[in-house]
Length: 225
Length: 234
Length: 49
Image (cartoon, rainbow over all chains, first blue to last red; front, side):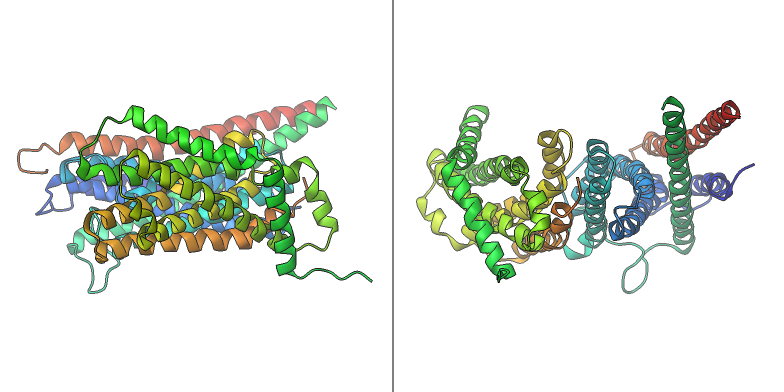
């Protein structure tokens, strides 16, 4: 009844809920931030999922640019939509976490600015996709913008090491090892892995939906003609 | 026997042609300058009199925003002449390299933008009662030039990719504004830091490095990918 | 800034509610859309035959 992407989506959502329960009730409290730090188990995986979408968008864009006359943008569109959802989630959870820890909902430091930029670019991609009629021109234009979005992702990630900012320094991938407690790190890493698979499953289910919709439109057009 | 022009020659020919169009239709040069002046005027009404110690910061912020909006006018019309005369269809038949075409457009917008920026900076100095020596400050000039490079790079690429979009006048700014944010942020932070301290310290270096990095990324992507957009079937 | 007097519960609750909407809510919409589209396709195929 359920194909692989849908099965994967349901299974990983269940795994994600289990991970959240562990984040609320099992993992120890942080010395510096207390309980509010538990938002990290949602915020950081969401950020990684947003980056994963950008990577899928980059790959889909490169493939589409190689043969724009025969390519479609269904994978790019799916990756962009899912990426937008996760980027908004990253910004919202980051903002909520920022208020009790930094005393402000928002500040224009490097990482926050470039994450906000990523959200706007995902939105811009969808607007551009709707504005250009279907054809090689749309494939090329949207694919170029897709590559630009992918370029922004490493800048977001490296921005913390390049400049000292208000944002927390890198916790996981830093020289000298992580600063986190073992249990916390294990739960965070598993959360990242689960969320990345949730993201990929969402992309592929959405892509199938887009294709189904397109074939329905084609059939109904043929019926009218 | 015809002699196909080299890429450099093609670039210069297209650049000369674009500048001639601007000089012939003077409103293409005047409109961005006029718009920048209006923006500066609006700021003077919207923002009350500031204490002398923060006037230089206000000058930087207002100048950069005025340049940004003026460039948006100039950039959204980058390919207007070519679109009207079906030049892109002719380009596909001619031996002109599309990368040379994009490079010519980049240089064209840079030249026009330099004029607009210089005028905007001067007017801003006058309106904020600042010292004219700021115009000859190499760091201020360098910061404005790097800002212009970044805005031009991303603007020309977006003008190319929105060429065939419905409602291009709306889609272009919707993409241009967010992608220009890093350039504006770095430029304003670096220039304000310089005007406050006149010291080339780590913070200054950080913002300047980020600005140069974005310029390099945007210009490279424009040169590599811009030609794909103008080379396409409608 | 954060201190022992700050109750973290509303912040954690708000973050995870938004998380649930984005992940579980969006997934539900994807699966529901798929069922709807498959029903339309079946109906269309039946109509053709």
